[in-house]
Length: 369
Ligand SMILES: *[C@@H]1O[C@H](CO)[C@@H](O)[C@H](O)[C@H]1NC(C)=O
Ligand SMILES: *[C@@H]1O[C@H](CO)[C@@H](O)[C@H](O)[C@H]1NC(C)=O
Ligand SMILES: *[C@@H]1O[C@H](CO)[C@@H](O)[C@H](O)[C@H]1NC(C)=O
Ligand SMILES: *[C@@H]1O[C@H](CO)[C@@H](O)[C@H](O)[C@H]1NC(C)=O
Ligand SMILES: *[C@@H]1O[C@H](CO)[C@@H](O)[C@H](O)[C@H]1NC(C)=O
Ligand SMILES: *[C@@H]1O[C@H](CO)[C@@H](O)[C@H](O)[C@H]1NC(C)=O
Ligand SMILES: *[C@@H]1O[C@H](CO)[C@@H](O)[C@H](O)[C@H]1NC(C)=O
Ligand SMILES: *[C@@H]1O[C@H](CO)[C@@H](O)[C@H](O)[C@H]1NC(C)=O
Ligand SMILES: *[C@@H]1O[C@H](CO)[C@@H](O)[C@H](O)[C@H]1NC(C)=O
Image 1 (cartoon, rainbow, N blue to C red):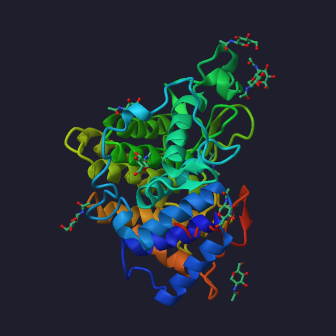
Image 2 (image 1 turned 120 degrees about the vertical axis):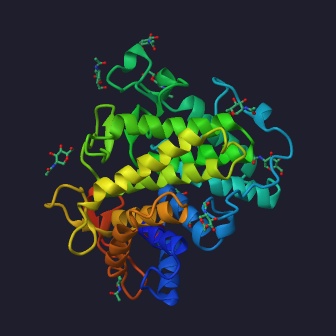
């Protein structure tokens, strides 16, 4: 979470230069701290996204060019893909299926810029393709399709399927709002890189399915549903922000793809679903310009990581010319979050990266936002 909050701040400053009252030197400290403290796969993935948005904006999906792969693929890339049953593999060993995918875009770019360099005997391109196939063909889907999996406890092999929402967990079918930031943006970027509209559609469908299963009537999303252990039906602030921002990244990938004309209704949905979360969250902004860790539960601490990423979402909705409706809320949140950045560049008062109910002292994720 710490890295998330950091990245959130940096992408905020990318979204609206000058909107934060943090000085450039303070922001570079924030950046350094993000680099120093990111450890988990999703933190490194979020960090990579923050670096793209802040340091190399022309490689980010949010710029006016928006397509970091302008001249690719050199030839249709579809044939090299594995089929179901041939097996993919995750970029990293992780109990989470979804988190390592957050590094996928950086790996695709590394492949492009290094000419498929090898690391430990595996080329970047192969690693990205393996990750794609792992997500598409090996990770359990929700709802589980195996009769053994009616309560969601079947393992990946039993559940391998090509319909349903791609689980955030590797061993059983479970959906986490976090996953919307980790997985669909990678599928979409791979689709743009390989000129494959099906993958952009899959990215959209995954957002749609996650919304179907996680959204409550309030418009806000629950955190974790599915297999029977460790569920969290609460309206986790950071999870809502992950989902809202992740859907905008998919929107932007489609917008900058050759398929924009074909996929207008999908883009309209993504824009509306992202805005819906920000709109529903607005009423929960505290007098400090933050959110409670669980949006509607004032007994939980006020978290700056989720607030940072939600602010970034509101500003991106504006800079993408979707709507200016959430700029005032975003600026309130930005101000609240900026107040929590201390002089060493740490975003303080953030959710603990290893325990989403607990407050931590620092969060790489927050800095990445
Ligand atoms: C994240 O990156 C750091 C170095 O920046 C590295 O030490 C760490 O192992 C990475 N984490 C994972 C899960 O790969
Ligand atoms: C698009 O990607 C999917 C999944 O990897 C693959 O099955 C399909 O063949 C690709 N289509 C084209 C036209 O390359
Ligand atoms: C990786 O780079 C190589 C060399 O440029 C290219 O042939 C290959 O298609 C790329 N693969 C991916 C998945 O980016
Ligand atoms: C269910 O589990 C049993 C015992 O492990 C196995 O033999 C069977 O093939 C499974 N059925 C399905 C549909 O996966
Ligand atoms: C549900 O999962 C539990 C824990 O793995 C298992 O013991 C139980 O048999 C499962 N129940 C059904 C109906 O599949
Ligand atoms: C899936 O579950 C079966 C039966 O419990 C087990 O034999 C198998 O090793 C598991 N496979 C994986 C990939 O976890
Ligand atoms: C917050 O919203 C959730 C989901 O709608 C609901 O179950 C819970 O009771 C609410 N909590 C409070 C404190 O109102
Ligand atoms: C939004 O509008 C501005 C001003 O017209 C333009 O420069 C920018 O490219 C637009 N952004 C997108 C994503 O279309
Ligand atoms: C800023 O916060 C970090 C993390 O809590 C802490 O280690 C550091 O000492 C703080 N800096 C100052 C100047 O208080």
